[in-house]
Image (tube, rainbow, N blue to C red; front, side, top):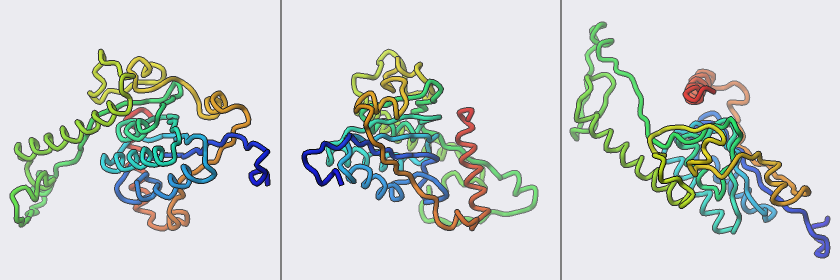
Length: 266
């Protein structure tokens, strides 16, 4: 009722967007992706004219394109609505997770949070000896000499590896440019920040990748006062996963997610 009474001042409001999980191109499980977050972010920035948006991030990374799309959406909405964005890192914001965090105006961490991993990785398996052992013949027909690049069932070709490295360097350069454009002169030029290395908690402060150690609720109360109100937004799991459908796919996705977090000891 009070919002209809102009002489009564409403308390400050902060929209809290929880971004938890791997970043993936497809809408699988609880993976973060731009299309799935679009409505959520639109509401967070627009509903009730919030004084700020706080991103609660816990992600080991994933798809470079989706990381870029999500970060771009956050910046676009922040500028359209003239709302400041704060990122609060929980367990980890590495690789694509940090890409999204750096879309915020300020980045805050827990003293045990892991941040960084500004690099590009590609991993896979080779099955050539396995299929030879069982007398399996691989037949692939292409139009375009690079169409079957890095086929795991064929011997690795040096030219394919070189091509992959060129692609990785391009993505890495774009990642670096994004971080530099967002963090600006806060970055420590005396430290090589773009090797894929990671930092824990306050140790990241000297790098300029973060703004300090602080938790979401206390920090927002420090800035907006004790009467600040929070509106929490988070992705819902797809309907079918809540009822155990596609069990095999869910198990595989869970293993992939756990493996990604395990890289950082989580």
